[in-house]
Image (cartoon, rainbow, N blue to C red; front, side):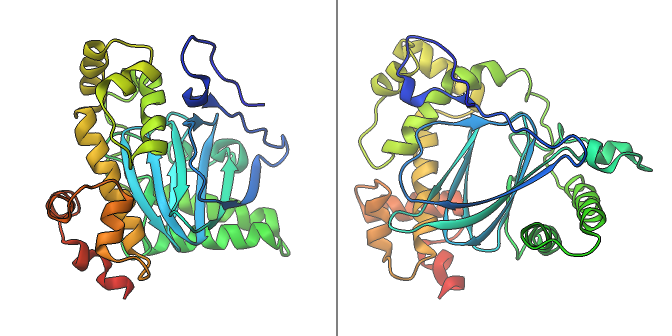
Amino acid sequence: MHKRPHSGRDARYQPLHAPITLPEDFPFRPTYHVQKDEPITTLHRHDGIELGYCFSGSGVFVVEDKVMPFSAGCATVINERELHLAQSTPGTESSWAFLYVDPARLIGACDEPLLLSTTELCGREFANVLAPDAHPTICALLRELADESREPGEGHRSVVRGLVLSLMARLHRLPGRRSGDTSSRAPSLQRLAPALAYIGSHYAEELGIPTLARVCAMSGTHFRRSFGAALGQTPKEYLTRFRVQKAASLLRDPRHSVLEASLSAGFQSLSAFNRHFRAIMGVSPREWRRPAA
């Protein structure tokens, strides 16, 4: 059952704890999910690591203060520390495998037991969404794990254990693991989660400090100060980054023009969109969409 904290804030945007029950004898649970394009208003976290593989579709993952586009073939890694939500590109849906596992209990004795820890796989600089061109081995392992779980073969449990161990070893090679402020800023992020969820649902609208502060039950001054301290950026900077990443996911679909993507993401002018897109993504919108052409 999802547990929602009690408060006087708007209940629609409060963060959830969504516990995952794993079998005692084999702590691994595969799920398969079609993500619709309806806005998800609530950030949530689980009590264990979530490994994802995107079979089809595109959209964005919001993991606390990070906004990352995904597309078919991407893998996701989200541990028990980080609040998150996913949104498919408007007008589409995406198909996923989400795999929940307790690596230490699943594998047991290991020459390098620290590789089975999940607590380090997070942080401000940790990339939770892994693209297949940059991380082909991790994405291929997750796809194999998802396929094996859907159609178990002979020696299924041994195959799953081997794939999970290989995945964990490679995940521990990724840069940006567990920035030092992860635990200290967790309470602040919990209080700001309603604002992040609200942005996720209303990013294309005009959003100001009073609205965002209200869903967090804070004064405007306190909200602005808390946001900057916890996320290292202003609310306006976060909103701009969110809009750019939403546009980036739209541009992967050749049916959307650059102008359509910019307007759908909430930009009022094409020149502003091009400027912000290049500053955040490092390339122009047309250059970004070129690999998908």
